[in-house]
Length: 262
Image (cartoon, rainbow, N blue to C red; front, side):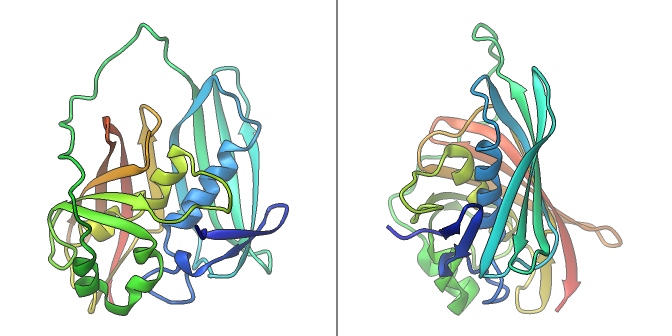
């Protein structure tokens, strides 16, 4: 199985075609770099008694489908709460994206309050690749075809909210099974696309950031996105996504949107 990134040296990665986004063939979709930043956060002085409760990814500019560097550090250490930062840069040293994550001490085993949001419908039997082709055309050959999409409601080709099950068709890096967090971050950035309300041919709706809050860690290879978008005249756009796995809801994602004419 091929991967989204291939190692060149310690902390240096070559981006593969699977990272290519729908807006520009030379720039990455936000999902793979978010997952790569998540991997760096997980590997930074890991502590099993803590879990990642919130990740914010700031997209500082176009992320090239090219060589990238990744570094991470603990910004605010603590016994029960700590803040970790990871940064992605291009070959020239320009920062492309930055992620911060709060790691929080796990809740006691005898404390339980269930997520009261309804569980999504089961994973459909068949992929919905034809909807992607209708909505995005030739751009499907990059990131969009590196993920398996199985729609529950809504349509990629029509405006409105959508519910879609997703599964990565490639590993994030070679010879390494993606963690639940990496799988989730690789697709959570797609909430705004799944719930698109505007014509892609005439309008940009690009998110400069992604924030994900989790109350438990994802399990399994399937991640469900239940997404909707709101846009206010004189304001901005906001895409919100309920994130689930086969065991039910596990968190929420949000994206601020730049909405502008092409």
